[in-house]
Image 1 (cartoon, rainbow, N blue to C red):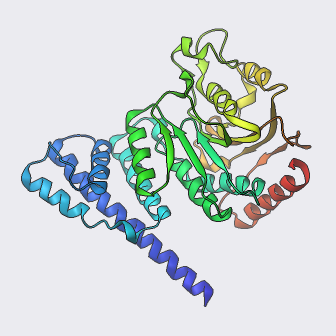
Image 2: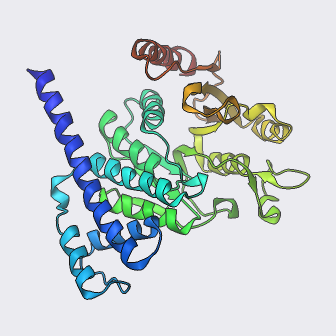
Image 3: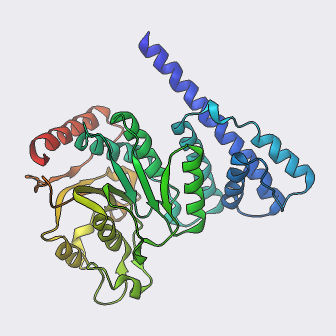
Amino acid sequence: MFKYCEKELSILTEGQIERFFDILNRASELIQKATDQSYLDSLIETLAVIQDPDTEESGLNDADAKKLINICSEFKRSEYDSETLRKGLQMAILKAIRVDNVQANYQITPDTIANVIGYIISGIFRGTESISLLDPAMGTGNLLTALNNQLSNTLSLTPTVSGIENDDAMFELAADSFELQHIHAELFHEDAVQNVLAPMVDVAVSDLPIGYYPIDKNAKGFATHSENGHSYVHHLLIEFAMNHVKKGGFGFFLVPSQLFQTDEAKQLLKWMQGKIYLQGLLNLPGELFQNAAAQKAILILQNTGEKAKQADPVMLGEFPSFKDQQAFAKFLTEIDAWEEKDLK
């Protein structure tokens, strides 16, 4: 009986996700067609109208404005939980990425990866009375909101959330996502490399942008900056993030699997010595990536201080295929054992 009800609940939730996406999609397509702008910009305008029906759309004639209001009026916030709204918006953003062929840094962290990171965090912080999170490059906010919702359930508490994003469109989408889901958060529309006055937190987490940071003078104050030429932005953001993590706190970062196999890694390792414990590097399944060079891993760092210690051994390995449920469950059990025996 329980399993039957659980299945019915899953079907109902999927139906609600599709219904919310349908509202977003019809409204965005209407705006896009009427204004000849991108689907992404149209989606941002749709979210503004959904949350405030009195918002004026100057690019629409009276007939289209009336159609837009009618579509958006189908949305009733009380009919949806936070996760349903997050997933519906995620579908709309994925469509924007496909339709507009937008740049790679708009890509959304898959839920399977977000769930794994949340699982590890839940295990480490089980029994805690509070937890604070910071994402120094939150993008559209999908990873941060997914973790907030997951940790709210697994730890039975309300996380304190902060996020930083420099890109205008992504920041707007993130802000709308937090507001839609009724998640209180401190959001900074700034470039983290320019040393934002962000709070100190228990956990830093981010699906880091990969590549070179273009403004050398902004990177000069970082120990991980390159001596010659541009610095890696993911190195700078790891340093920034861990500088905003409390003593004994953790960082969870999606990074290239070959992170420590580049010439630039010397600066990163030098900065870590004496202040940061490398606790784990878990490669994600190769099947998720186009080629070996694009493969990513979950990097687990911990600040020294409090009761922190170097894990022995460091958790190294590669996740089995997410499709192989038995092997995947076994790997999670190994992580549980590592957390209890070697990390704590």
